[in-house]
Image 1 (spheres, rainbow, N blue to C red):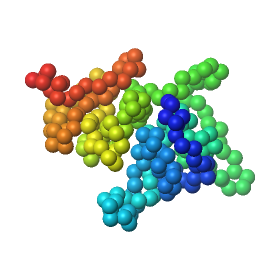
Image 2 (image 1 turned 90 degrees about the vertical axis):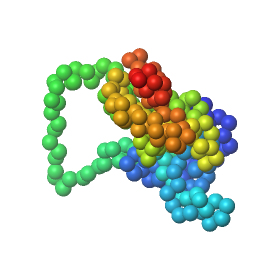
Image 3 (image 1 turned 90 degrees about the horizontal axis):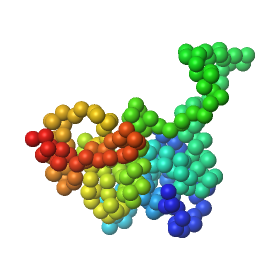
Image 4 (image 1 turned 180 degrees about the horizontal axis):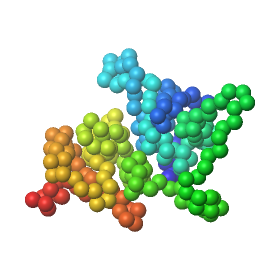
Length: 230
């Protein structure tokens, strides 16, 4: 993760933002440009730009997806004060503080599994489990694509998880659509054929992304898989 080394210096520490459903909502144009230069793609959700040459683009506010936000926090892609602020707001959204009435004492929580008490003194593996958690699985794929120097946006409207670009999504057409699957997950032929047809109609290459048993991210091109099965 060395994306931030050659970036122009900007004081983004005072940038105002909100966290909604683990996504960052903000209006700062400098922040938008800075994130874009790091190959992270905030989505514009505001009104169309006033310039006629850019009337097809929407303006602020901007929304940065949860995968990009997690990548920023894990690898400190932004300055520490801002990263700390993002981490704090993410934690507050996940565990909102609710004060009870005066004199209220919360009942102690009892562990369902007594053995978990013995594990408290031992080091824990806090990494995502991509074989059990769909969000963690998608994040592993997103991170791998980012580390390959690619851009990723949401691919839901095409029936995929990610659209993948080799250049700035505002300037280039997406070349791949990636659907994330579990290792050894069974997919119906109809689903694969539908995915391949959408890819052909939109001039893309459809791929399945998964995490192997050795935690390696791998991809299968849907067209090649269908030819092998037929």
